[in-house]
Image (cartoon, rainbow, N blue to C red; front, side):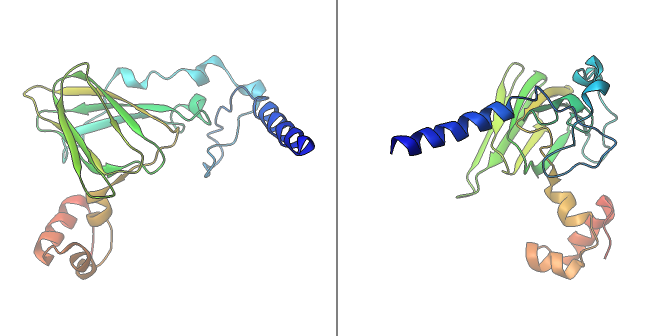
Length: 211
């Protein structure tokens, strides 16, 4: 019994020691991204710039359809977060702007409102219960991993928020684009969404889908 406990403890200690050997794993963006993230850049090629990202200082051009824009600081833009289980993003919403229902399959999200008023919420997977709130500057809201959630500029001025996520590659799937920005035949979309064909074709036309 004591030997078994000692053996298990030794394995845990060895595994922890080996895991702590690498202080970081700056992503080598010249290699493909995989399920475990990017391969590590050679230590001799790592510089301080790998751990600094200035992209959140200014907004990106807003998408005219949703009147919003997201500036990501994920591993593919900010290689220093590769393997660390964290990332950030900037969210800009014009008046009337919206981030449609979407999910991050790989991580949970925390949203911090810097400017304006943002109505935000998510839908639970167990009973489709909706949790939403109008947030003001200084408020934060959390969105659990994988759940559908949204953000809407509910004020009369542009809104700005900073987002943190629990993964360097959280992933993103916007429900509307998944349904209507593809080549899935209209009749199949109609059968699986209960929408009429005319509405589906209109949405496909707006979002760039076919069939």
